[in-house]
Image (cartoon, rainbow, N blue to C red; front, top):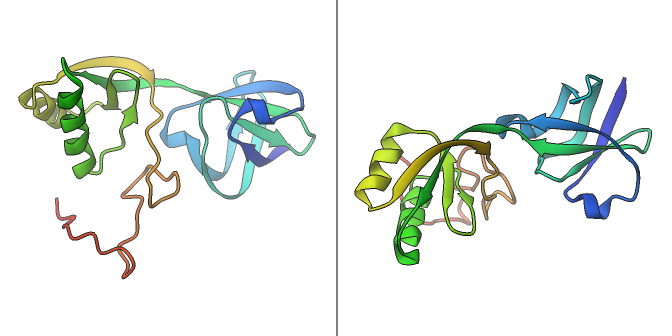
Length: 166
């Protein structure tokens, strides 16, 4: 079985042949070691040195030197729009305060579908729209790209003074 031993976050940085593609939802793109199947039906082993968040347009480099292009699958998400930029920033602050994985797009925010959060953004003056689209949330500053869980430390070096009791 072919094995992917390296991940490159942009196809621009890969000078080999891209032989196949693999389409994965967000949760399936945060991996280190797993058996996967390409869109063309060929199995391969993902065996990276550490956990990576595989991004749309990234390349998994096989032991043969060929590449597999990573594609983000469409999944149930909510696009959030506001009439004014300041309102969108306010909504983004509330989402961040709740540690919700959020994708920052040019004119909107994107989150996973969650009826409670959708109600909150309506109260904040935003318009949520349910769509099926790729989800590629912003990586956490403390987690160096980690976007699942809290993504930051709670050790002595990071006393940011708020509770995580939900």
